[in-house]
Image (tube, rainbow, N blue to C red; front, side, top):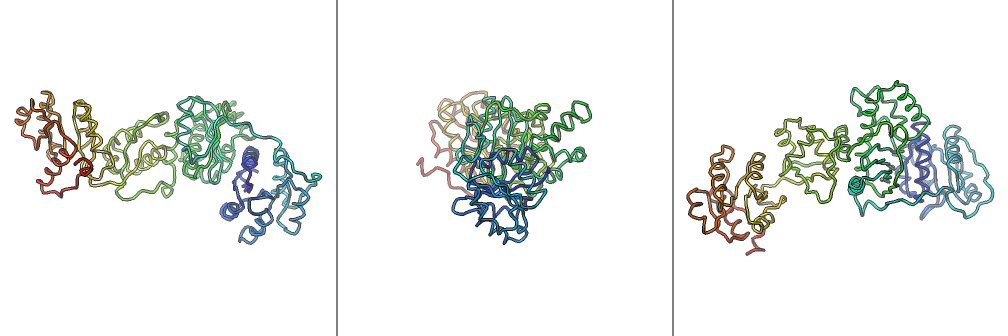
Length: 516
């Protein structure tokens, strides 16, 4: 039974949820389609072992969908079970279609659902059973409880929802309906314990296993759905010390990382969080206790190269400013945190790899995972010159921050208000220009030492002076001085003038029209 694929075509979200849950627990791989058109598109792609087809669909009927299905090459012999509240009427409409091998009346119990599907697959013959007179009755006998939190992924991103649950230290199960599959993230105190799905191809995951885990690949046939007799058997083996807990936890982490990335790149549509819902027994025994970022990074590390997020020549990455976000780093290695640490300013993968001494391919994959987690963002590398600024005055510092945004095509930079902050930035960067407040004697001494630094020989130095410090500042013989009070236009004109004098192409000042 395990590994067989069922395509469920039903416009009812309740039916899709219940069939996915119960059939998944029975070991089936479940693919969901909310309309006849979507089901017809998926059928030749996934080649299911059986289709569970709703008789009444928006704008069409199961009969019309089925007649189109059998005309698709390769789909004409797929066994189909029709589900409907109009039992006798529905049965009568399908008597001349040979691949209809069963019917499932609504309402149905989980036991009837599983036995009907098993008969349809294993027997492969017509097993229509009369369920009495048809009537307009509720679709299911077990309606799901009201969710503590639910909504559309168009309004709230999946990363935002997991951040909220992490920051609130919530325990329960987050169910995510993606384009094709349904995923379940079990959390305890906000940390991800396991990721499960019914739409699971064990062979795909097995192909990405590292050599040390390949002997455990058969276990993947039982672990993705989350609850089955085989899972209970694995727990027994753990109790008897037959299975290595460390190796099995590594396998579950690999599986969770693969599924997390698959979920995030699979067009999530809706989410539902049920509080205080515990993970199946195996996963409470071997919880992952991981952050979302760590899972997405590992998912990118094992992802086939052709499935990584697309990037163009000249793509650079920079760290996002977190506002109420989740910076839970649990599970991220020290090396991968170093990747994040150098992205204070835009960097290409090649530059990051060179700076921290990691293979370029590994850096590309780590950046891919951090991008999915929205800890960084990607942009196209421009010819913007980089400016570092030391400015004490709060109002002037804020004006300069607005003048040098990270995505500016002309000048981009960082503004700090202390000497240590500037020195740390200079260690990581080779700026085109350094702007220094020279009103303080220690700042003037810093200007002298920076001018002598070998890695800053090509940098332009501009002093920001008040009338009281102008004479002392002039003795430093910097490339230019800007007197207080100054505005954005004065700074931009000074920068443009210096680079023009150096024989470089002058650039139109950003925002010059707005401040002139």
